Length: 305
Image (cartoon, rainbow, N blue to C red; front, side, top):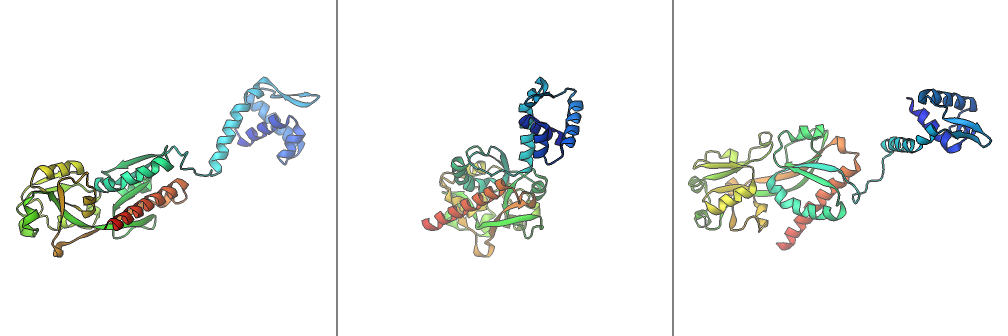
């Protein structure tokens, strides 16, 4: 059915007059009469009968009033962008984020969202391959990842900061007193923490010195808390961003040791989204909230220092 017919029917129901309805729709009275004839044919009902007060709806027409309001209201909402309100929004967003970044960022972000967007559902995914492709397809809304050397023009990227890599070991580990060198690392097994999209990233020190890390045994896992428990009970080592040491609860009885200067590596992080979300009020708002949360975390760290 021509949707204009439904609009005309709603106007006729409100005005109860063919001439007044024609005036509101900026058409002639004969044109409105033809529209009414098409409506009668479509609904197989007279819809209106003449009376001293104009035209009166039939029971069939009266039964359509509420449905017309809902249908035409929904169509109007599709075409008119409503004002976005974080307080009342009830949708879901998905974020690709590694477990060690999430352990640091998500508690602060969730604390903020609990107050300003209590109905928002945030889905975080730690193992996501092909993140840029999933951002483009809509399977992901955001990715917080190790920054790549370059991004296509269809992606927007915001640097979030950087961190040196460090060697994490239990507090009583021999390396704490022995000191770190390639030679000493050869003596101990390592934990290889899974990183999404690793094949598309620049090689980390763990890949550059694969003959060192894991030469005395290796456990690979994508679960950071499992890795930390292994550290507390063994002489394994874990190569991880140094900022993780700020989480006293997670790194209980675990210490971070600096890499030798000649092997020091800085990891840069970025927030990434696809251009398809550029005009979305929700995505613009959450983009800003993530950046603001990271900025506040960094400021608190500086003040502690």
